[in-house]
Amino acid sequence: MSSTSDLTSAAAGPGRAMAAGPARPVGAPVPALVLPAYALDGRSLHWNAARTAVMFDSTMAEYHSDANAVSSSALKSLVRSPAHMRAYLAGHCEETASQRLGSAVHAAVFEPQRFARDYVVWNGDRRGRKWLDFSRMNAGREILSIKELARVEQCAQAVLVAPAVHDDQQTYTVADLIQYGQVERNVYWLDETTGLTCRMRADLMIQHVTLDLKTTDDARAGEFVRQCVRLHYDIQSAFYLRGRRAFDPRLKSAPFLFVAAELADPYGVQVHQADEEAFVAVGDDKVSVALQTLRVCRQMNQYPSYSAPRTTLKIPVWARYPESSLNI
Picture 1: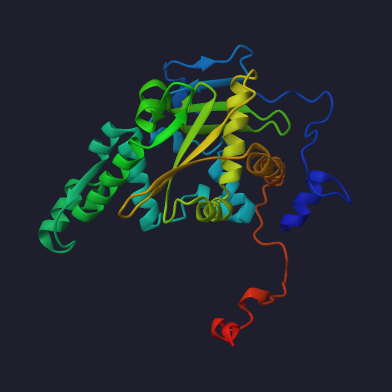
Picture 2: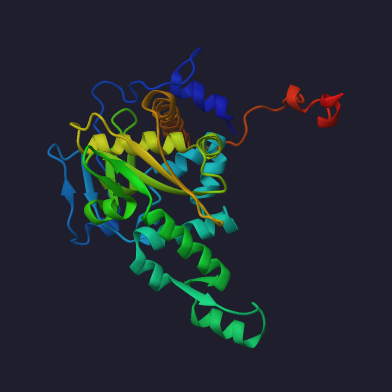
């Protein structure tokens, strides 16, 4: 099987690192935007003027059922390796306990009706006949403990009252933006370089602002940015702004806001804006490389794991000496 570096070479040509560039031969047919079958059931589709991008509503389950269109989550897993992306798309990556609570907070903030429908509470030990009967009766729902529900509700309330956007006359909270903005809407567009159909589902879009909620252990800028780097939030911000600009090419200035919410008392919330040059632009370069890599993977039907046969490990300078020895 080819390595990741082989795929990179195939996409970029000999002697060059892969970068954005023409992906189709001159005169080749222009690929069409491919929508999922569920979007063609008669629901309202809002196309842009050039009919190169479309916006529509769907359930969360419908959105995640589309295995063809490229999402930011797929690209973030591809950064590790194409094999990891394929495992992610196949549903082989289990949700952690923190991610499960984060999803619950997300639903409570942006989709309270879905939260009330899809989440139930169990007060007691998760064993015995009563637990088995309850879990069977609520199959397909997320079951929270009393303590988990309290954490979710307190975190969600802190998010809703957090100040997010300011103008000369007023400060708008997250709840205000939800009232006036577009929540959980799908945008599909065609990446012109690779011909891949792309999709995004922003937490909130209002005018030129895009907002995304992230739960975290520490919402302070210096700590949260570490999470951004580790989990590739720069890729997400760049990819979402590509989608928004594909739908509306007039969109120039487009602030991307992260609402960082702590999942423990005192449930601190801090809003951070992604810097266009030192954050979004970095992610945009990664998006270009990832899309090209994915295009080649699909053409060759190969999704390799790590490419290097062997690496050399070195203990970094900061970890070479016991901390106590620094005080001698």
